[in-house]
Image (tube, rainbow, N blue to C red; front, side, top):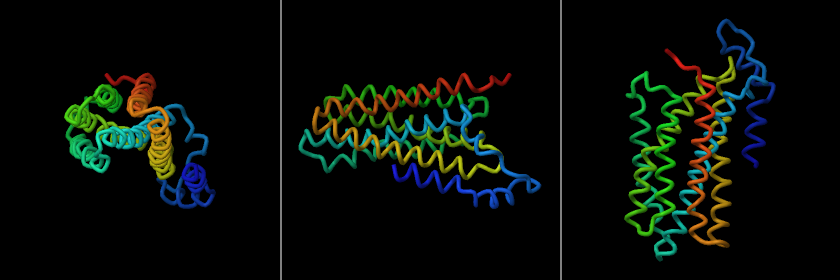
Length: 220
């Protein structure tokens, strides 16, 4: 909540207009603040918030999963499997062909994220969980890069820094919120409930991707 309120207030502070004006082409005034709340841009914010939820839910539910097996301290090692794949694939996005549009990438890699989350729910062994995490790594990195790219492309004139702040805050707030909720579920309901949280988060990512697809003109 502190991040949401104070980072947002900082990004929208009137003093930012002077800096933005000096950076816009020809010294033109930046776009109105209302431009930050266009549906096409807010859809990206919701999608990246879903990725933040996914990060927090996955690590917390994975810790509960490993705690049931008496090895909670190894959760970070397993989580690293997803991180390695995510980093490699995120860098690889730069080599994807332009005809593979950002809207399509969001749906494809978001779908992989959703498939991996389904495996997380059904995992009954550490080996199965490792396979699920490897698949999740394929989906989450490119999805996050795609969302940042869309946010940059849809930034109103002179408001790119504010948009990046909105997207970064979406990840942070989503991760913190999901960590708290998932931990509470693991403690009071059980690990099975906690393992559902990454699936819910991935569903939000894909749902936002579908909405984004309808908001993106088809290039012929």
